[in-house]
Image 1: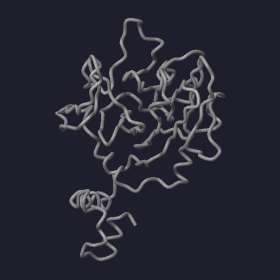
Image 2: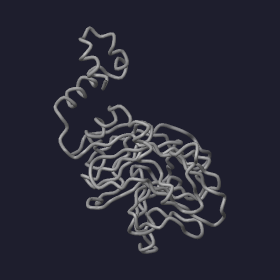
Image 3: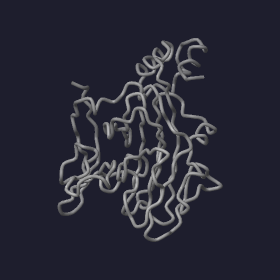
Image 4: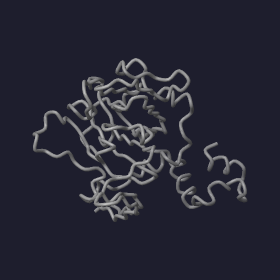
Length: 278
């Protein structure tokens, strides 16, 4: 039995007038166990600007209808081309370790088909018409942000098959309210893809990803949309050093309220620096 996760997720009741309310769930099972390594990674200082650029969108691996902005290498812009679905991959393909990145995609710029996920180097980057291109074949896995559905190898699924709902705890009359940013969690050691929103871990979306080389990818249809990727950090599959584990325990004991006041503690400066990743 996995640990319980309870959180406040906003939803919209699609019956009648939209009404916002917190949705609380006591979630159990392996798919909802927030990986301990994820907490360690998120507690680390964010990746440097150079590292973020190395893991940014690839200007040479994109649909011709999108381009990486000259003044912001972490953001791509899509031309207003009608009846076209366009993708772009990240520069780095991951085969091992835990990797986390954030996608910023303003809700008003998503249109009818906005999909975020991962793909191999063989996944197509353009399609005629408007479609959920990420997840359309066996080379990609995607979360449709508008429909709250998961897609993989969609074109080869029976017509009667309904794509899984994500987050999977949503009731039939609920629609997930997704903010402008979300966090993608790719664990190549476990072979899983997961997502977080506003600090809430939403559970495993896809399994069975081990042994592949996977790149960040999105597919977009909205003209002039701009989508940014920001690599948060990564962890190698090797066990973490004891010093790192001890620091994590100490920072947890301090809590969020006091974590920014480490300099005021009656501790040697060396220990203060250690607790602040300096």
